[in-house]
Length: 426
Ligand code: PMP
Image (cartoon, rainbow, N blue to C red):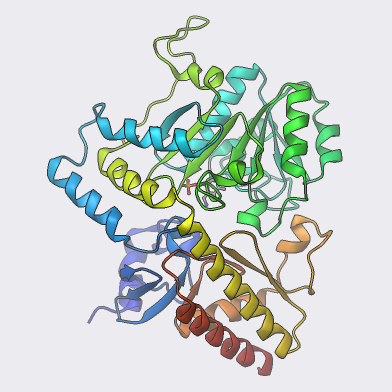
């Protein structure tokens, strides 16, 4: 019989740690998911989970969205991929152009990490300066250029294998406009990166007015401002956080939802910067001025699914349902904390829910303070929830989808309460 344990044994023999992504690593072993639909999924042992991970926040429409699957299946019968230009990529780019207010032009990539790599290369090329300012704790993918600063409160080497010379080009700022303004006095900084939700999809929210403030500072100091909307794009509103708040970056990085939850990504932004990618407009002896390739960029299979998703995402109804379900989850969890007299908080913007175990408020706390969690408690909580059939994405954060219903959310809150009761008593 196939079990989670037997699969883990096989996996460890052929894959480091048995995993393809370091955050999928679990002891004694992960659950191997065989099937998913809407807000639920089932592992190889037939165990069911209410899903608040949702493809690392990529499945805003719920798992295995029927319209996306139908579009992908239709395209599969024509061709999954040939490496040529095709009509679907134009339609997909037109959707992004219509929905994202700052998207004059669009370029597709292979992932969110590739999107931030490319946007930074464009920022450097356009500004002519190599240093990048990024905000403490914000995540922009796993590549060398922006890994330093992803772990809040930590300025050291982010990983073996990242050259010091590369890390030295990254300047880390707290999410304070005064601090950012001081650091921007460094002439060598040409690009600014901000995760549009605040760190870790909003577990460390941005102070009020921060995006407009950093927009003003970038304009005054002549820097390229990049919003990482890999999470917020199409989730905070059909046009992302920029449409909701009315603050426009120069470039935007996208992935996860922009592909309809399929592999890939995109960047979009101001024509005068994006045109550096145009092979027909050589500059300084380079044609195109900024090089970008990628075998699977805008693969037709992905484009077909993404277009189906864009249509569903464009009205705002999907976002309203997911937001309502996250609000219900946060309220329910806060009631659990209160009734069990635990000084903790469930909070979050849009369709997210984050937990803080250091008190009933996160006001005025730094990224490091918010993200430093009592390990035994959150480990126990996460494992207890998984055992009882609730997958909360990370130890302290999760998302909802338009496929969540009040009944499923209430069931999850009940399980949360039981798990909490167990932890408090033990
Ligand atoms: N930026 C943000 C804000 C993200 O949350 C992520 C992924 N969690 C990335 C970039 C990287 O995207 P990917 O995993 O597709 O490389």
